[in-house]
Image (cartoon, rainbow, N blue to C red; front, side, top):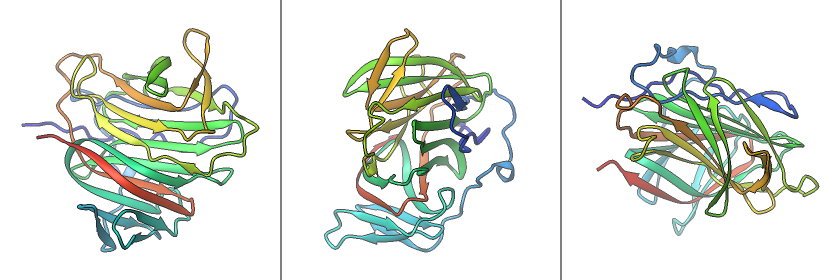
Length: 276
């Protein structure tokens, strides 16, 4: 029988601005780790789906909290507005069992303290979370995956399609880095791109999960990588490191939630990879 990960901790609480290390925890998807926390103990519990749902390009999308969904007449875009609470207001995307979800469009990130939370679920259980907060010095990014508190993850830094650096083996549930802007004087780009999520199907980390955060032009970051070299990146991938061969099950997910306090999210398209 296929085993699914259950959520161990929610580590995306926004922390105060720091110039070196900030809260940035994750734990690996794992079938022999410690008992998972109960859903009621999570800082932000999974919200049940309401009745305000629309079919957008063949996929069901449901409003969360105070958000309102408005598909365009030609069906090319889904406009999501009315958000005020970054933890509660947004959209839930109801999926078939998939291994990858890559949306395109824009999310309002203009506020000085703009924040975005994303949650991936399988069979009603949270299997991964991501948080993104804009600060005057750079982004604070937090992530969590399920299972083993002793796991690690890599922060992979890309410029275009080329990996330019890495922050390797960050401890799950441990600390990470502030990601400084490359253009600190820049009047920040008004929009964020939608984060992506997928399950790794092959290779040494098969069974692990990845959050990918693409950055708009003008919102690039400059990070000192593990070699001591400053690198400029326009995409960050948070990838689980799988250490115990054979203990990581094949995984899929069937729902993903995006919540924000920003004024608007605009969804244009969604690429899915199915498990079958």
